[in-house]
Image (cartoon, helix red, strand yellow):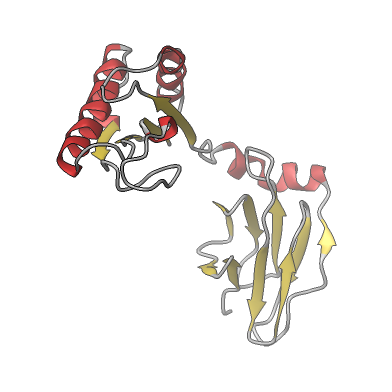
Length: 215
């Protein structure tokens, strides 16, 4: 049997095995079935509670899942997906509980702000370091991405060096808090990737930052 094609906002995904879950675009898709049976495809919220949309299609037609619990089924490859029904919570738990239990936790994003022209964290940013370390140590965390940034004041060379120093400062502080070095990757962007775009030479405190993403 030809596998169904699923898509999140123009990105296509093909069912790889009879029972699976895929997280993307604010949703989890669950599928159950195989070549000898009808495949059921269910849309459920992601771990943060958001629900996106997903398209299930065959050569004969398509259905768009748009709300939590939307479910369609696919049988023959030359038949369209079945009309959308609602999968009840007990069915989802009984059928996909094991799959959902091993889904990775959603990424956590932290923004640490710095003093002007320095690699010195602002007091409110210092308070976030323990939360970042705790998130990095949680079960399943595989990467901590640290990226340094600056505002648009000063030369390109100065801001390249400053954003790199800021990222390295956060790296050092997280290592002191027990975050494993193997999880960390560091990058810097100078003033080339502002959170708040400004003309060159204009100070903007929100751009003097380090972004930390824990996955």
